[in-house]
Image (cartoon, rainbow, N blue to C red; front, side, top):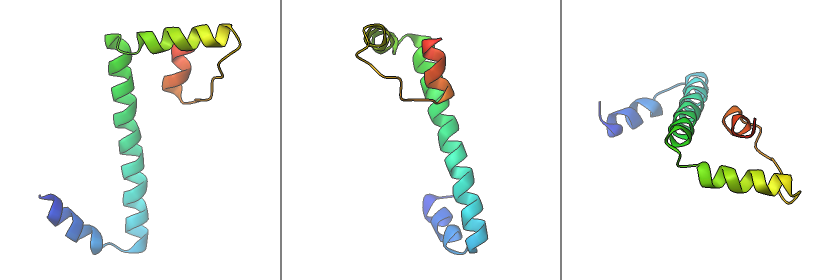
Length: 76
């Protein structure tokens, strides 16, 4: 199915169906983001940022604002 066909099908959805689709897309998008963060973490791509953030937290200069599970596990 092409993107154009998907767009056409979306235009035909009822309001309730559209809300359901948007909710699903949000969850799907978040799962992709979680997967990317996990891959970047496992590969070491985030090591320099983690080291910098930990240092700033120790020195009282930083603030942990992200409460997402992917963020929190970096600092445990």
